[in-house]
Structure formats: structure tokens, C-alpha cells
Length: 497
Image (cartoon, rainbow, N blue to C red; front, side):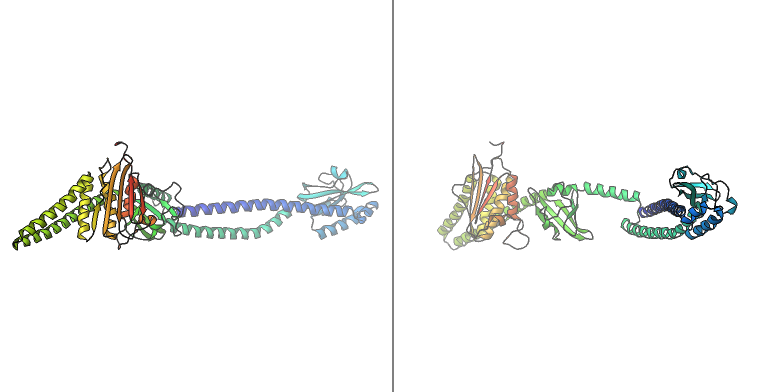
């Protein structure tokens, strides 16, 4: 059996609520209308009774020999004129002078008269000869005493008839209210049905549970940004990778410093304090969907691969240069100029060995020494020069060689790209490690140097210096830029001190 959709259940519930509400309002209105009509009838009866009691004609008739002959026609005229159902004029003992039914004249009045005999006008509901009625009783004063009593009243069934007349119009209003309520409920339900795709509460709950489980289980960060640039949803992975505060949802992306993630690029690299993130963003019906993946380890491996590739390129450059020198030496030998061949060969060998001895002697971190030798050969191949300062003296001091390769390699690469002469200084002491790379290029300012994506080269570059800044921060160091001179200071790890 197919369960009712949420929209269908809401329709039935709202119709019941509307029906109960309207019915309750109608019942309350009927009660109030009955009370109002009854009170109005009592007021009319009171006014008529007081008016008759104060009439000079009534006082004069009471003084005559046959009061009924004069009072009965008068009472009937007033009754018909005012719309009350009866006007009874009676003696103080309750004997009637007048009555709509002449047969009741001379009989005792049915009702209370004590308060009227005491001089008070009052109203009450009482059942008399004409049935239940709302009546008023008042005294007739003459000569300073109560000479008679007047009672005027309207039957309850007449009041009920008036109520039914009003209810006929009220019924139309009620029917209209029900129709409008049902129409409004149907419109709301139709919209709800579209938004919930006709699913019931169980299905919606299951979808929510699945959505919540998937959202918080995936390792990739997920953000949903509204059309106004406000972060509407983010999962746990996104909070962790981007370092978002707990109250991030509902805040503008610009305020969170993440406005750059909404540029619609694929595989955009985003750097945080210690992470390299791959970001994808795409527009959707609800706004922009941003996915974030952690590429920190991949980037580290890529950096190592780049270093190895650099070593290979450097060796290729050295081999190419050595081959050129060897061809020259062979040619000189073939020409019989052996002395010149020996001089050229030994000079090249001596220069290469001096450079190797100089670098290896000053830099006792093998990976870093190999990097510098390779970069020196690369610079020479490109028509430049890489020089290690005379006062350089460095061992690793327990620092991660991969981080040192990232820092020195990227600084040297950027210097070689921008200048023809690059000088590298490396030293270590009790206060830590100092790495200084200077070139004869135009230089740049500190703010732009470590901005992710800043570069003087073409597309696809601009991460090197940003990665340098990231590595320096991971090692707890600082980096200063003064034109074309980059100075990195790294503290010595506690375990080495």
C-alpha cells in the first residue's frame, strides 16, 4: 500500500484545521449573537415598560372606574408599534389589567414582582403564558406610591428566529471562508508537493539520513554557496581542510577569505597554512558547488619528483657540457695539438672538481649539495651563473631534507628565471639555519612574492614562492624579501639542541 506523501498529509491536516477553526468560530459567533440579541431584547422590553409606566394616559386610566377599558387598547397599540410580544399592566398584587390574550385579563401575572414593588426596574428570563420570554418589570408611580406594575417582553422563540435569519447570512460567509481556506491549502500543498517531489515523511527522513551520512563521511570537502555569495552548507572535511570556524555557515565567502574559490575553475590550487588543496567549483541551480581535495602529500611527492627531474636535467646539462669539452679535446688530439688538449681537459676537470669540492665541503646535506650542483650546471647551460658564497657552511641540523629542497630549489629556480647571476649563501649556527638567495634581477616586493599564483612567467606557474612560504611556516621559520634578495631563517629543532 502506497503511503501518503507529505504534501497529501499536510493537505488533510490543514483542511481539518481550517474546518475545526471555522466551526469553532461559527459556534462562538452564534453564542455571542444569541447573547447579544437576548440582551438587546431585554433592553427593548425595559425601554417599552418604562415608557408605558411613565405615560400620563396610563396614570389617568388607573384612576378611573374601569382601567382595563382604557389600558387594553393603549397597550396593544404600543405593543404593535414597538414590536414586543406583550405588554401587561397589572395591579400591585399581580392581577392583570391588560394582556395580548384577553382571556388572561384578570388573572395573576406569572413572574417575579417583588423588586418592582420595591421601586426597582429589572429584567429577567421567565416562562409565562406565552412561553419563555425576556421581560422587564417596572413600577407605575402615582401620588408618591406604586399604583401598578408594567411588564413588557419578547419571546425567546422570536429571538431565536432573528438569530436564524442572521445565521443564514453567516452560513454563506462560513462557506466562503471554508472555500477560500481549502483553495489556499491546496495551493500551498501543491507547492509543497513539487518541492518534496511527492515523497512522504519516511522517504524524506531516509533521504536526509543518507545525505547526512554521505556529507560527513566523504574525505573531500564540500561547500554549497548561495547566489549571494553566502556559505549555506559545508561538511566536516571542508571545515578541517579550510580551517573554517564553527559559525561559518551563513557568513559571506568574502568574509571567510574564500571568495577566490568561486571563479568556476577546475583543479584550482589553493594554499592554506600547511596544506595544498585542489579546488573545483561549478554553478548549480542552488548557487555554486565547491569541492576541495587534499593534495598536500601528492604535492610533496610532486616536489620530490621535480627535484629528481631537476637532478636529471642538471646531469644532462653537465653531460652535454662535458661532451662538448670532450669533442674539443679529441679534435685537438687529432690535430696533433696534444699539449693544448691536455691543458683544456685538465682545466675543465679541475674546475668541475673544485666546484664539487666547494659545494660538498660547504653543504654537508647530500641531497641539498646535489641540488646545488645540478642547478649550477643548469644555470651555466642557460648562459647564467650560480655561485655559492665563500662563507657558506651548512649541515642539515636535523631539518627535513625535503623541506630544504623545496625552499632552496624554488628560490634558485625563480632567481635563474629572472637573472643571469645568482648567489646562494647557506649557513648554520646555534640560532638556526640561514638561507640567502640573491640575484641581479629587478626583484619584487614582499606582499606579491608569496601570493599564490604570482609569477612573471606564463600560465601554469606561480606556486613556487607560495610553496616556499608554506615550507618555511611548517619549519617555524621566517622569510624576508628585500628587492632581489630572499633571506630565510629556520630554527634548529629542539632534539638537535
